[in-house]
Image (tube, rainbow, N blue to C red; front, side, top):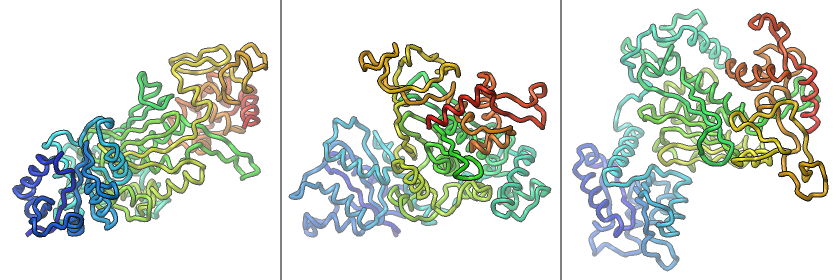
Length: 541
């Protein structure tokens, strides 16, 4: 006997073939037929049909509502609302589990009210799109299986629990395990010492199963995870404008362990956004502030990496635009969560629990279901709009930036600053060309407003944004580790490549022991030009 009831909601005339096909599918599929009973309005006997209430009563009886949204809106009642929208609203009000599939089409071809209904659903739980009946069946089957897993009707391990057939214990990096243990002891009081054998650490973390190394062990501590099974990566791109356009100014692909991917992606974002440095009146050490809170960036990236669907051929994508940061994750919310629930207190439902456990022990996540709420709060506190969450073919997070005049200028395909055109390849302006500008001053220097130069920001960063951030925070003689901490970075190689080398080449920073670049006693300090620039930048702030 079926355990759960499924109500199929759609405009009957538009989706007549799909409705008939899905009825047959639920009734004949060996797995679905044993678990689900499908309810359709047209199957209600005529004698039991009070038109305005029967279909809503069926919604009330259902455990799941499947909505098919296409071009038509349906017959509007006296209040201007179609039965399809009424069904969706009733399911929302009663907290019935909802799955929405949108027929692929250009928006201008849809009824205006259907566009609004799709927009309302996209704020919460759109599962996916479909073009053919086969697409629809496939998407519904996946969603039903996910639902049964959550209800514990199917007992099966996830990706992270499965044994990686190509991996042996020798493929696990001892140094990566030691680094993890050191961090987990400090952060979560892990009861293991750094001298604990690798096999014992993995056993404690449940990352060895039936004498085999699990996928989670490889992804967390593998010497070369991308050569063993799933090729998981994080692709990071920076665009000057507000759209995805080629050529891409900056594109990097980060592999390695999941810890390394998170650290590298976070540093990539921090190197592309603005940072300001406060005064020592605020604290013993001059505080740094990024335009997007670091905790928000880290939470979004960690969630994408840890909760991704590793069976998908897609990868996590991190994209920085002039007005926003977008992070795309090949995965979906579990059936027990909706977009609405992400904005209110909710439990933690990790897609990959073994990965999440190790990330928790290393203090990358809190494992309390508070991550999205913390992101919302921190963005509010920083004066930014709340992050946006949505699900279509991927789970997507949008974090807004303040669109400054500088970024408006940089978003233009071609721009001229006081008659100079930055190199289209690197878009750098040398240190000697850094100036503080006044609005409405023409290129000739006149101040009459006639033939005025384009509006530009009151200050312009150093040759790159990374160098500018380095100049702002550097004082005295500092080690690499101290500079990493001051910038809030984790990746030492990124610090060298994107910050120190360019600053040294510009004559803004120098080494205290230039003849021995790799010396353990090496420190970095500002040159006279660097100090002058730092003072000008701080005055401008």
